[in-house]
Length: 194
Image 1 (cartoon, rainbow, N blue to C red):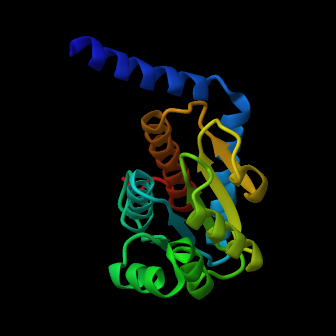
Image 2 (image 1 turned 120 degrees about the vertical axis):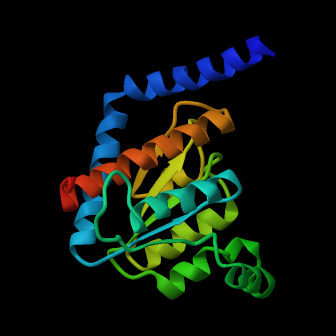
Image 3 (image 1 turned 45 degrees about the vertical axis):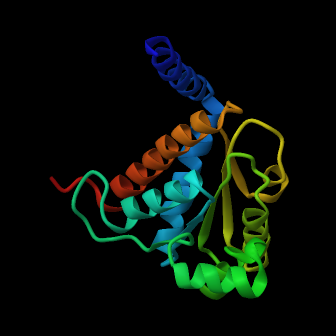
């Protein structure tokens, strides 16, 4: 059991070292943070969605933006499209699971918003439909996925591909990247108020 635990921790560290060593990936993360700051400056918001563990990541990222991250400051407008059970079950029942997030973007998204699409496979049907709906509304699309080729590759305006095909390693890295983006947004918009 100890060997298994050690291997899991080392695999996680190895994935993060690959991210750290990829200067283009680091630049992409910084650029996404800058785009989010620009979107907020224009009065827009961030919408986030995913399935399963990625749904939890969507809610986690939104919580950091709306509440706080490192220090007390005003809340930032962000919506996790994974949280309202009445909306989710109504859309799922009336339009099908594939339209779960697209319908919410149709209703709540406006030009200049950002949609962060989280999918470890990059092929989740409801995420793909949400990206397509975002494109129709001129919403900026940011994809968080894994290393494999996927549908999101050609659809997203910006994409972060974690250098792994392991779902746990991808998800661990997604929340790390989400935390970094939230921290940069918070610091650049508000400056530290300690």
